[in-house]
Image 1: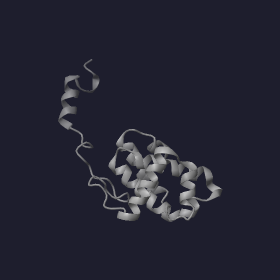
Image 2: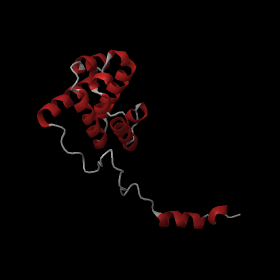
Image 3: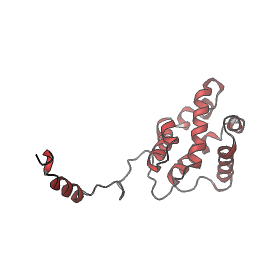
Image 4: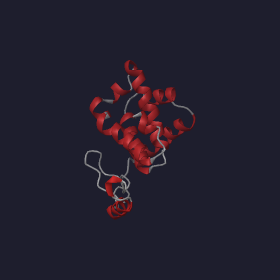
Length: 147
């Protein structure tokens, strides 16, 4: 979770946000568990990651941050906990996203987002240009490097 939340690259931060949704599904473990006093270390990590996801430059990461927020804000202690672990820009981002969710709802995922439960389809950036690879390997003399 901390790996994805701290990355500047959109792919890894997006992966981090979707991992929180799919592997540590707040609906499955309950908002009370995530925000309980007995798991303060986990609570702090989740809340800090949430703030980072909401501030991320990747649209997909911000969307999944809002999904996490939509679940966690159901806890009666959510506002107190967010104020405890976040400050400044992250706290403002969480409060703005909370207000956005209350007025407009979660909304539709960005067009590049595929459900966290189904595999991601290949995009143009994910596809390998095989002709480029072939021309590079043949110019290097094949696998032996031209020995």
